[in-house]
Image 1 (cartoon, helix red, strand yellow):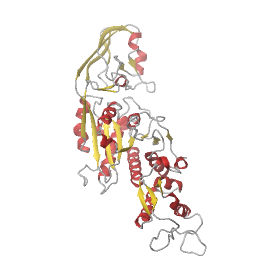
Image 2 (cartoon, helix red, strand yellow; image 1 turned 180 degrees about the vertical axis):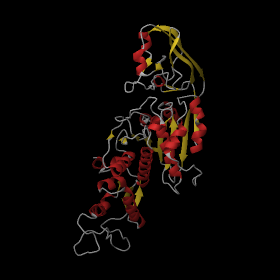
Image 3 (spheres, rainbow, N blue to C red; image 1 turned 135 degrees about the vertical axis):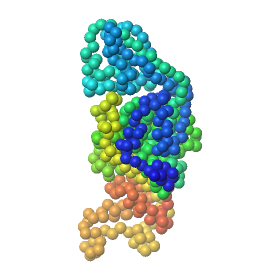
Image 4 (cartoon, rainbow, N blue to C red; image 1 turned 60 degrees about the vertical axis):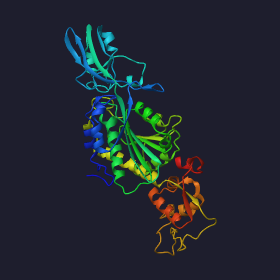
Length: 458
């Protein structure tokens, strides 16, 4: 079934993870290429391509890389075949042939400390352009069993020029102001890190596409971590770049741990306000932290000088299967994935509602006048039809009486909602009434000048 925009209707998230999982993802390679029709069956992505050998600020795009042989032998007997597991060699391993002793071999063997039978995912080399070495990823149990002696190592690799591919889907809104969602696709056979983020991003865009109208524009980017985003952002034309106002990164969002919030570089952007508001109302208590203190990902690219796009991360990291062959679709929770998707949608909805008011008249208006009908009743012992106690409606009454002073063109509705402990959707509906009767007008909130931003954050 398709939405009104011709987009596929969102399906159960675990099903989507299973469809996106079985590809040997990398920065460049056959797995990423093979995933194109599967991705495009969900959303009509545009695919940007950047050629092997390209360099930008020290970041380099490698050639397509395929391990065709990866064996460790002792006395002619096969000790380990690195092709048995898709994680059996380090990413972008160099070829190597030779006979070495155990101490030298162990310098090229990598394992997981947490699970003696797991195969670890070693992904450092793509992010260290000057580092070129070979290596295997093996279970710790095998590592501990190796005996002294000579070992024959034979790693053969096929390489050829190709392209790094960035999936890019734009869902237009009434305004060009854009919310970017991003997840990465460079980890082979890692379901939570980060097929879960890809699935949630796709599902959120499918659900947004099913709505009859949107104020904001939404953009989903799926690409190899860091390198893909570096090249994509550099290629975005100036008029597009100026519209990229908010970004949400979705690393590891499908396990059963609580969802955590990592704030933008300043912690004071509109996306921070929206996310904190949603987390308070959805979870009451939650874990949050400043920039780069919970999880490291592409927020550094979006927030880099010249771009400075306020970027938050939502994650359920850490989790036991992280960067091992245990990170399979069976480890994920439909409930956790769905909760993440709904949280992202709530943040988007909050941004949709987020603007400031500016008063159009001076003086105190009688809000109960039928021309305005803006009055929120307060408790009064003589009024049987009104609130039954002083506490009932107290937050609304306080907002009503303070709102004229907060219609300063600087204070956002999210800040007002947080100050008076009210849901943003209800505050936005009330603010619209002020606009409709001509006592206020909508303006873009200037967070830097807001007089209550620090109070809202605390």
